[in-house]
Picture 1 (tube, rainbow, N blue to C red):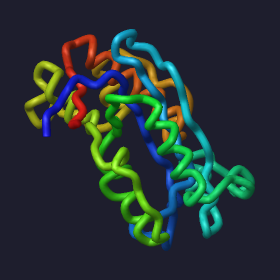
Picture 2: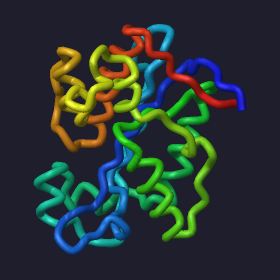
Picture 3: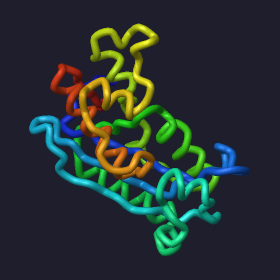
Picture 4: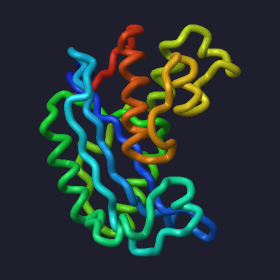
Length: 195
């Protein structure tokens, strides 16, 4: 499959139910954000954002970590409605690739929940770039273990960027990851999409 330079990067960072008694296999997506960066201009050109109603209650630990309350998700649509909306949104941006901070969002979380709920998952969600890998490939000295990307906050610090908003808010984290990706592009990293 040939790879071409992406025209857009779609930054995604889910938030999910968490807390005591909720194992990774039982987590549910509760925030679904996508931030679109146009590579030619290095500008954020669009956003998709919604909370997602889980089948379980939001635990206090989860609210403390993410800022997401039960009231915010109570009237939100379920993943079965959000997923087609997010797919349609993403498909507007031809020659794009998702960018995540780690592989959990699209390698683990979305496949587990869609399988559990018997939802079809479009191919648009089946390839992505882990921004930590892009960071390590781009930054001088990041190939040594002590200088590798340790997370979003570490990458922001290494690039001299400020964390804006609330850490572990999906939309705020997506915006911060977008800033990292933009800086990596400025340093010569090329995001590619397989066609």
